[in-house]
Figure 1 (cartoon, helix red, strand yellow):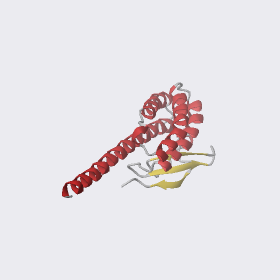
Figure 2 (figure 1 turned 90 degrees about the vertical axis):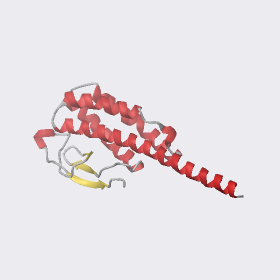
Figure 3 (figure 1 turned 45 degrees about the horizontal axis):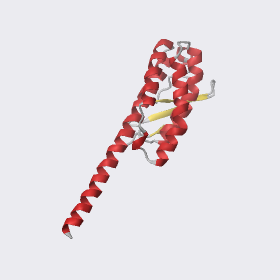
Figure 4 (figure 1 turned 90 degrees about the horizontal axis):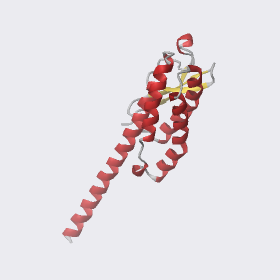
Length: 169
């Protein structure tokens, strides 16, 4: 009887470790995507289409690298509904250095990144959903101070913080 109980406890502990490792993998993937997204945003803030193009390629690669096998069924459904949209916009941004075109796709990219981070609240740092009333579009930032990616240097501080996404503990 003690042996069966020991085996049961061992299996439960093993299942907990496997589950924790799976969530760490998901968390790492989403954080890598978030970092790459922020790199694109920062390039657009600086009016740097060439860097945005390069960083969007990295973002696209990070999106493609996500493994859904470690996700719950709910997480898999959420990822499936947004991954194609994220890939579409990041690919378009990575195919041109024309900043106006990049910014058009960045609005959609930002909307879908926000949805992903709401579905996967694993961001390691606090993030801010910010809104530009001139563009009527939002973006995510790791800084509370406004640095507008839609207008860059010409209207750098246009906008406001609309929501804070707390960092995962």
